[in-house]
Amino acid sequence: MKRAFVVGYPISHSRSPLIHGFWLRELGIEGSYERIAVEPAAFEAFATTLAGQGFAGGNVTVPHKEAAFRLASVDDPVARDLEAVNTLWLEQGVLKGMNTDVIGFLANLDQEAPGWSERLRQAVVLGAGGASRAIVYALLQRGAERILLANRTLDRAEALARHFGPKVTALAWSEAAAALQTADLLVNTTSLGMKGQPPLDLDLSPLPGTALVTDIVYVPLETPLLAAARRRGLATVDGLGMLLHQAVPGFERWFGARPRVTPQLRALVLADIEAHA
Ligand code: ATR
Image 1 (tube, rainbow, N blue to C red):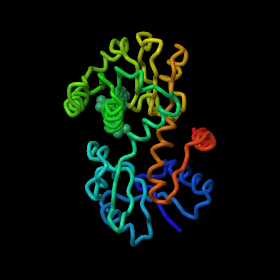
Image 2 (image 1 turned 30 degrees about the horizontal axis):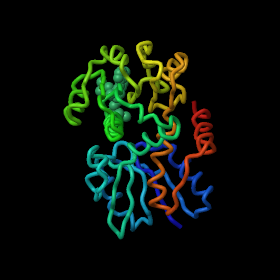
Image 3 (image 1 turned 90 degrees about the vertical axis):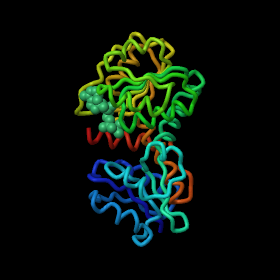
């Protein structure tokens, strides 16, 4: 029996066991996927002894993604850029790592808004944390010509803009609304709009009618931002698909079959979100 895990600290909120458990049943694979809480001081000992513990690999979440990057052998250019690993596996006894956030973000938009990146020239990205870095990377990979990055703390947006070069421009938070005028895509990568957090209060009226709006927050599924975009008649994509798609590469490596993101999987995770709302 093949075994995989999600490791974090704390870990109780993770929906990954639900996702991988669904795929294991659907594909008839004899395997397990467990939640494991490991304190920061114990992470290195955990990650470097996976084979001895009987694991094929697993997912890594907060606060261990940077430590996982340092401990694993990393060929993946995304993980190297982000200096963070969220997926570990063993390859001929060697601990390998990658980061699937870019794949997850792009696959979600490709599935829910086909052709979106052919229309992409300018994007406005809200936030400048780890998620923002993955999304800016993803948008540049898909040929965005200009990315306007607005963040409450301007310094963090400026640091990210320097990291990515001349296509990325940092903006003060107050400049975000004006920047929408020429945007083909608006992405929220902040925690604003998440259950228990303040809503994201941004006037969407400057956005062109052809713009796409997406949010990485998925609790609630329809955030105040997505609701406002929908009222304006704009196309929207919610954040749940990113969570589902980012799980695919790990499952394939640990269990040897490529799983699919289906309406049934979405419904299962959505029911869990609603049960705990
Ligand atoms: P992640 O790795 O998920 O991106 P993070 O690095 O903690 O998490 O980044 C959180 C993002 O949400 C940041 O852009 C943060 O803005 P700051 O850089 O100014 O902290 C943004 N954010 C969180 N709470 C916010 C709030 N109340 N108003 C505006 N932005 C907020």
